[in-house]
Image (cartoon, rainbow, N blue to C red; front, side):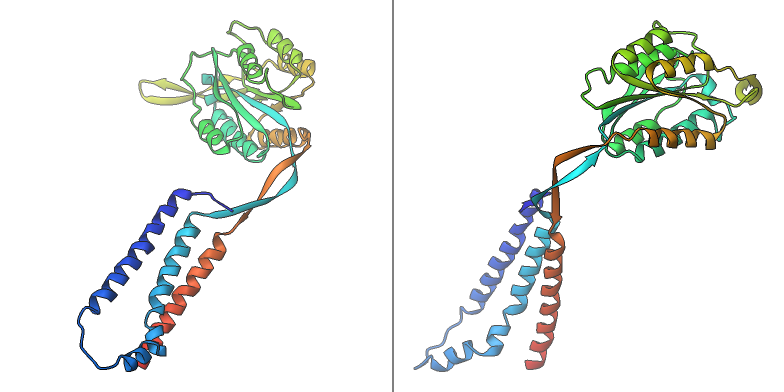
Length: 327
């Protein structure tokens, strides 16, 4: 048995101090004395049922406090090992954060929809290492590969436009995503690249980035975001934010080429529902399972200690009621 929070065991000093205080009060009350020819009557009285029961409520209370402290420290046992299946996949989400992602052909806009659906995707893959790369005119790693879902989701929520130079550097974004996994020992490596535009900046061309991905055995799923025709785009004017229709331009030929050359697929998302369906489809396609033998099975023990503490408190209450009637 071991404790998840052993520092709480320091509270065991409390019942020890209470016992010392109780003994001190007992001895203090015995200080007055009286000379008698024989102590036989008092010996008999000291061993009476009432004399014994008088101390039991305190003993039960100390036992309850001790058990509660142990329960708070969360005792656990790990004597078994269980075979479990894990995905064995490293995934990097490469997301376009250029200003065009503020277009309102998605609800409430492209970037918000992409973030919300990506968060759902992250939550559905608890066994994989996932990272986040964002790109516009340049690219950077928002979160390295990790299994910490809380951190991933929080960092995904913090993504917004305007933090880096504007533009669409698809090559840089893809190359950065691949670099996050180049030393990975995962059985499968995947990049999900989402963009709504045409490559117009960056030092690395998309074709070069695709060759790098292919060299490292990384599949790239590309997603073009935006409806056909035009989409409402926010523009700042002297009278506040106005929306004007802007032509949707997605280099589908390039995205298809990147996906095909790396063994992935290209998808087109024209609304929130379709984008969610795309992530769900990728989620189903990427299921490379492997068996791991060294996964410990933990047994929680705090429930038993908590129940024992409750029983002690109830017995203390019952004994107090009995003693009041006897006295």
